[in-house]
Length: 531
Image 1 (cartoon, rainbow, N blue to C red):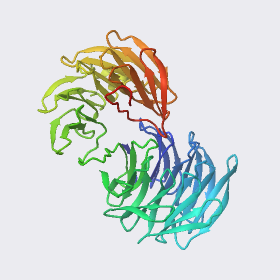
Image 2: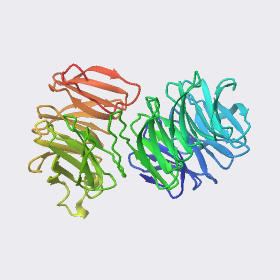
Image 3: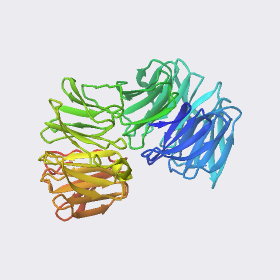
Image 4: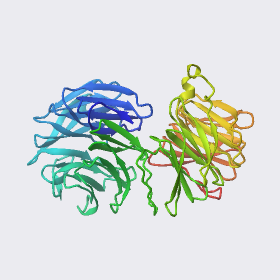
């Protein structure tokens, strides 16, 4: 969670998902690193910042504010490149898919498109004058359409090149938010009538709606178009199925939620609120028959191998939950504070949890059914605080048991994979890396362990002596790993939008499976030919 001193009014992810831009009532636009929370740059603008947007190529950040100005910045340095003047507050900004156009929406009752004609020179291409204030604007991903929303109680769709109005989507109150699906076939809207809607662009037909307890102030489609996230005046961020309006996840704030966005890979949602906080969370979205709701943040969960149980821990608390998937009943047991990783043994009788809190970094093992704590493992528990290095006090994000449950491996921001004997808790191996560890996986026979690291490399080690037997550079950060049941193949997925299949006999890549976004999960079939 990233805290700010005043209400956060707007949020946007960078195209690679590594940064977040925010606008606030404290009159600043800021850019943060997602993983560390560090502030990259800040621009003080002299009035509340009402809108922010990254360009799809990642080169620019645009802002809009109460000073009647849209600004364009260098995304890396924060240097201001252009100022685009309106006659009243600029409520929304959006870049075209090719990053060459910027759309603005203003209280001066206009929506405008500016085009980058020569280097950093942005000139007005066209403007449309509406009857009332324009509060929202968005380009369709195919670059053909521009959608607007405002006090006219309609969402209007225009031709980007000519500015001609193509359709009008009626609402019962002010439309404060509009967002296209990635395939440009649907438009999500948020209105003061307390309803989030999804429309089909071609027909103008309303496909679904979600009624909330207050005005809907922001909407965002997931990358695959299945879900819509909403921000509401009722202090809540919600996620619902675009097809039927069924709510599947909810996050509460202490104030009005004004900003919402899915990350580019679709696994995370960021929300900003009048309570001065920004939450980055990973919603447990499922089409299953059970929905489990808890009043605290959960950042890690795992199924038992037979699918009967799901385990998850409280990040802002100290409880471990093991829930029966069929009945929804759950067992709550005391765990370490700040749980960031969860893993079951292969037979499901034990569950391990890890803490990511500074100066704790504890891993604990419990009996799944009884909740009895079996073992605590902390590599720093006997080291005085003054002797603890930064490597030893960073969050643990990855956990894995060997298939025979003999070993437990941990990895995280400390740049080191540690392997413990499950029964005794004794650390038997330590495998240093140049960057944070995002995933670990044992081979079925327990002889090898694969790791995915922030330095964009896949590594495989021999568990018995710690020897590195394979290292392979990736074209983006690897996120997930999985061995085939026979141990012959290793699959790695990551930010390069591919799942790569490696033959562990030849240590060579034999196949590459392409995706439209980052690969964040891998499932294996019982037979070796499918993944």
